[in-house]
Image (cartoon, rainbow, N blue to C red; front, side, top):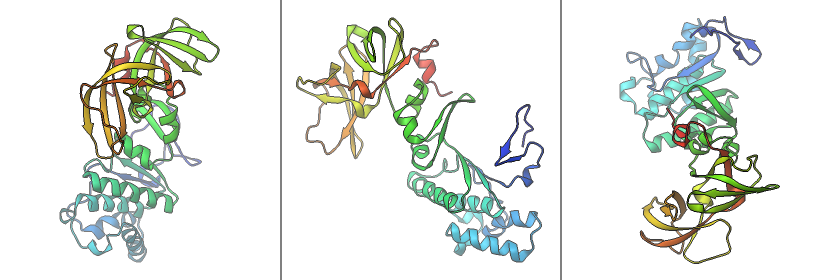
Length: 316
């Protein structure tokens, strides 16, 4: 809708900078549904074909097809106020498809729905997009939603793209601290490079604790941040032969259904979070003394941000 100050916008091989929005074959799905309240479901869906000048027979055929696709043909005479939130969002998608969209822009389309409806509808939208061989750009603040439905994710912060990749690439190989924290969850331990020998690097954390990491580009003496996923930690009560062991105390235990979430205060006063299956044979209690360890190969190493760790992690 806004004329760009610079650059070119292509949809496929078509330059669209000067093409009117109604002629770009883009379907826009609003966060707030934005259905016409005075029109019933049928009239909302065939609005696009009618505006494009299609005859009523062709518009009706398109309307039938998309309503069958979203499984709401039986509600074609209902007004938007008579529909649930999930139904209204499916009608909003149907309206975009009926207008001949080849590209769908989805602006947090599931943000106003309850969790169960949101989980079901996310897969419906993905299936429709795949079945029709469309491109969809889906904006969301829900990391699990992005991971579940996308082929590729672009993580943005303050208008800048921080990393683009598949869900697996972003989770397993984050390129910066923000992505490591925003996609999934990470624990961050601050320190500096104490020694380096080939691919093996020795990091000294707060309190003089030393940890071994591998395969990174940092140099001796540089301040660094270690990023470790909660599931990478091994938590035990007895001494073992695992690498990178640190003493700690269980500070909080939270039951989350399939997992138990442990918050642990390490001996150097750093705090970490780890998750373990709730079916595990051994549960720890608040106050238990434990030994925490983490594999070097599952530790991501980043240069310490100049503005500080807190500022680097900030979303806004």
